[in-house]
Image 1 (spheres, rainbow, N blue to C red):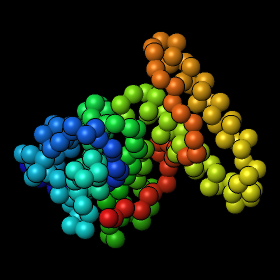
Image 2 (image 1 turned 135 degrees about the vertical axis):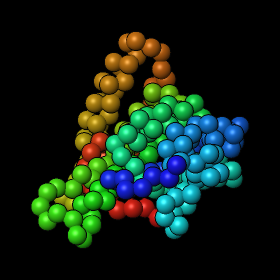
Image 3 (image 1 turned 120 degrees about the vertical axis):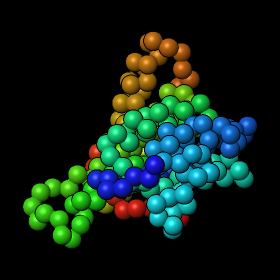
Image 4 (image 1 turned 180 degrees about the vertical axis):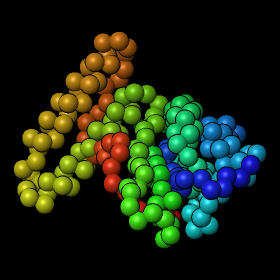
Length: 207
């Protein structure tokens, strides 16, 4: 059933690289938590975003990508759908990827809403990948990218090698803790950043 009068507009955004053998049938099942939440009976019915200018949930067969720029009205219970979706996508990915999720407080945005009070906007950065090492690689790259971008306002890029090395040490320590309990391929190192969980309101991305 369509959802009306929900407190949030929830926007899901990201590109997820898929294994070559993955097709629409597998995505239909992997994304079931999303399209069912939207009240659809299939991925074909639920792939469209609440906004026509957004591409929705799209399978790019040429580049083997799942492209997401999709908005749905909802509530905090959507967070469980996100957890289920990430678990499903992990099995289909060929590399790590990040997915941005923004909860827009629709009641706060209303012009005739209360003058006092705080917005309940929220921003999440989720990660999927074929292994913990692949996910950690994406997290590391995003964090490095963010830190370098911020510090280059004050320092030359060539001066920041030590900062990147310290970030690598942090991730190596986290990875070594995982290795103690399971065998994993060590993630490669290279430039990259991680906005983490929570944060300021983000603009809606359009394609």
